[in-house]
Length: 202
Image (tube, rainbow, N blue to C red):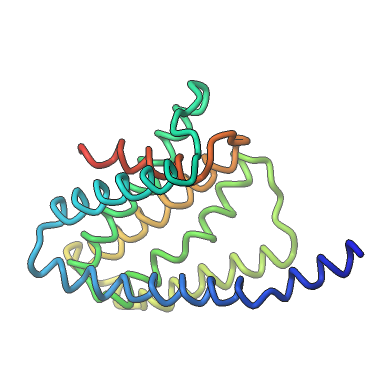
């Protein structure tokens, strides 16, 4: 009975619908931000977004009867991950899009799994298997192809965009590692809401 239930749950179409919806909206977010940045400064855009995110997430958590209080021991990791995943990542992606094509900026940002896998070796003690090694090599090769030979002779001003996007990918990877290093007792919605609260003032 358990095996049947597990198999049925694995084929739940709602999960695939949610993944598709997330992918669609996350993909549309990139050109949307690029368009908004023609009218709104980077810091203003992110301050509005972080504040709205904090209110909506903590409000939704409250309505769902989740405890909003975070245990004292969880605050350092919550703050560190928030600064990486929310503040640095979002500021760098916005800045990067203002310096280069959105399509290229998004691809560089999503090299995050490559850096997360590499950071997990010293920070989490993980050892990549053959499939992970092939994935790492493919990801790095793809990044080199994207940047192209022109990057070797380009002036520093033209490399600013890719460099900022690499910082965003590294920050996202480091934040992910920080989140994974501990077992959280606080609900994820509450954790994310407080991360937005911490990142809105800067």
